[in-house]
Image (cartoon, rainbow, N blue to C red; front, top):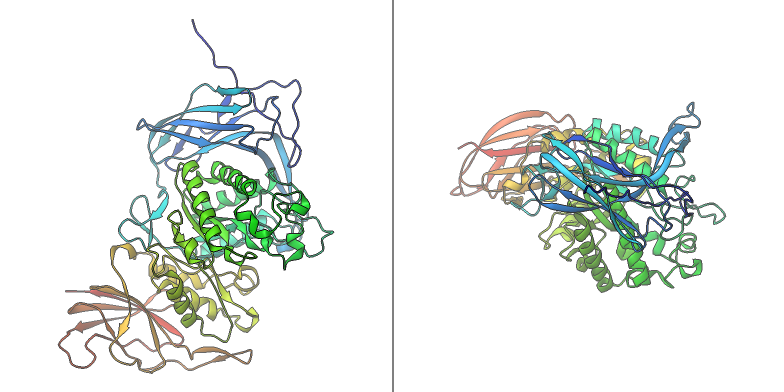
Length: 604
């Protein structure tokens, strides 16, 4: 006798913060929105709302999962999420920049969604499972076909050299990017249309986004995403309350992630921002919905790490984030905290335990196993096995040489973990107007790229420095220089010299292996800030340096212009360890101002 699978009876939620029962509505079966995609593209399923009460953001009340059977026969469980579609428009299209106002209008009814992507080709079979207080109900089987495609797949730690990242095909990924944590005022996703396009055309391919927001000091002002404060893509806010999510904010991150797909930009998502957990910022702590004074579970900021209710709420947000954005291979890493060790009464052991717990939970629920990172400088936290990437932050006064400081801070932070490292934030701590040409920015990019890090440092001042002075061009030359370099193929050491440089103040930074070297030559006197003013030095003429660490042999030498990204000159050199003076490879760069880069490869 034939049987039919009953339709899924689902929830209806009427906007963030209000959960209601849909009286008299009928459930509808699951449907496949994308019957055919290519490898690593998004497969999406939907299930319409029904009449069961509850909070769809609380997996203790209700969950929707998809059980996926892959062509290989392996099964995967993928979490679903509650979704509302929107249409965006500009309220004042005659305005420019941050004076524009985005308006999001809901389209259709809210419903469940499931998103998945796969590197396997062939038929993928999906069954949706709804679990609530009445038990478990299953949908009929739906089949999506995955065709061969060009996408590179997920980024992982290189098995060949754990200091670097690579994709599923074994190709090194060396990120060049910046922070783009928040949009200003009320421009919303239109802000990212402007910024991301400029970044990509300049040569950058990585951004750090935040699931957080700033608030104004006036506590009479509303404190939610899109209200005119600087905002990322928060789920919980003061406006939503705990355990209920801002679906318009989540839609904005959908839009930005899809924009990253089109532009081939990779990204990481930061969950927690420490400024909510500092009493000195009263206008934030007093607004924090976790604060017991607001009905939350914690009396003090530091209690957030150990309070069981707070940890459970954090896991809910992680689950929702994996369900909604985990499918995309352009997402490189989940960042659990921004600068956790700036928390009031920070406890390193509590931080390490919290990161172990949340990292293990992410590994449990994330079927794609994205990398996990955190920041700022706590060594116990970085050492947690669940943390895959070490990310420090580095700021310095404008009078300090950006290259030297970047190298010293890199060496202080990255060594000893056996993990990839790069600066999640970096920049001068002072007025950007002293450097409108972006020399500090330029030097930070090149110095960090030549430090042994897994990518160049991500500059913080995106809105009032990189954007204001249109400095995106500084990515171009470094992108060309690093494009074909397989960093993971070599075991690198930091560059050493066998003779003092000429001139003596010249600096050489970089990586050297037995048969090759990547070096950046920097003149710290070419650009300095003295007494708040920029001072430019002369061009470097007749320079030389001797590099040690290469095997004996004949080497091809390419000198690169760090502004244009072009090879300025080629030379040949010889290494003979029996030489008495200057026994390394003698390098004589072309005349330059500021800096010049070089690639050295053994010819025979």
